[in-house]
Length: 638
Image (cartoon, rainbow, N blue to C red; front, side, top):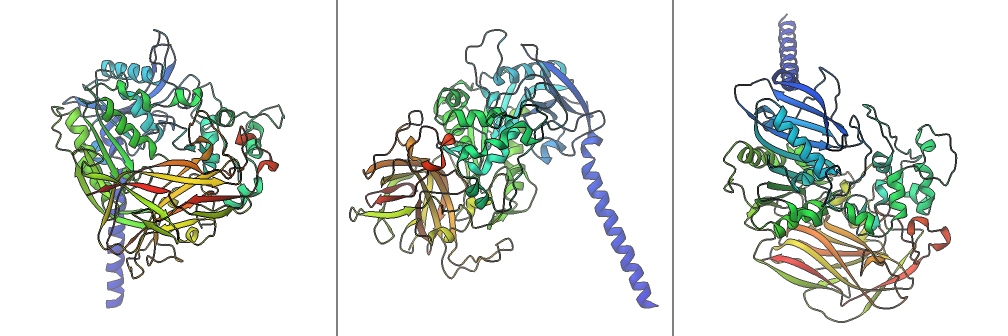
């Protein structure tokens, strides 16, 4: 009887706890519906095109509220009366503080009119009826402050990734009502972000092409694009078997994407983004016109900016760093700050407590702290407060990914950094002095390229590899390894890295990849629950930073040129900023290789004018050489 009574009490307790949890979840999920009204409007731009805009207005009309706006190519759904998002705004704090929150489908996407242009070019000298994303943003803000009730006249913009690009756009020739903008993981230039890195095509992103390149000219609330299907779970073998890039053209014809089309020309490319990529292999006027970094001299001092980026963001690392630096360079009077944390793409907007990137653990509540103490404070100060430059926030709030701690600086990179050259010496040594000039050879076998990950999988966009253990690569004969002795004191890098390689090849073309790696001590026992089963932190080779340069672009991204076979040649590769302490007992390692597959496409290793049109016969195995007067220029914090 006692047992039955105990079981009954326990059951009632569990049911009560479960109901309480459900009630809390339901309460959380209905916060927006309980506290906001939603209105969908189509706002006419100066050229007559109407952009679909969703406005969430607080039911509390006892005071005026600022407007927080995100413009996006990824849909402002859910569409329709009574259908509401369960989370709005940059974070839960700003949502619960009852700001007016606006989402807009950009021109040509989803429910907006017009035709979409990927990274639509900015027109500095527009006529009265000409439009671009700058004018679309201006016209939208103008309508909002004049037509949305109970707004206080102050507008802030934010967005992550592509929406981050539109947040950057909002700052150029900005509307007077725009007081604060936070471009986050913002695309700066598609020749250096996302789909290309220094001219090398990011093959691992090929399935995302149709998301941006499938034509549409009428509003729709349903997806009009379809993703190519891979008949394999092994992406390395899939792309290796496909061969030259031109063999992927079939995946970008409408009939192959389950889109109705009566034509059956197998050589036709219907996807306009894929066509743009394949027809413009160099940094020509098409790509140059779309890049936004060079226009950031037009950000007025009336707009405060907070640029946010992830130190291990595989998609958009170039964009936020170059955006911050460009505004800093041109806007001496601007309030411009940088937040640079231990995140992959957009992870700072998530609510998870434990902060992992792939196998690597950086700490707890890192994203939550950013949302509450940095992001919310920034928007409140400039949209609700007096908006002066005394925001209480640092100029640069950056995370030391080696020590796993935040630091604040008055300028980025910090003032007390010096440039140091470390040489790629013989016997796999990385030394602070040049010991000799020798040649180290390796064979770059076109049939057995170096994988970027040892995982057997297919991914839509790769992220985990940014902190992957690089032991699998270090043990290949076509990867050159150089490392220091065990460090006797901490060694902190703060800023960009420049690999100054001296190389040669038996061919006329080659890619060059440089990786900076933190080799952990053999006696390390700091394993974590997300570490893959086959790994240990003992001797873990943490990739701190990596980058590729398509060798043809070593002197100019606009005007490529072949290598002269067997001639010693300078190849300089800029690796984006890091803030990382190699701790005492660790080692600094550099890896140099020529393939990174299928993260980037295969270089034929014989020069052709357009790699996207190369034939099978153009691909040849070559012998590459790295000379020991090559060095890595570090920005070292003293």
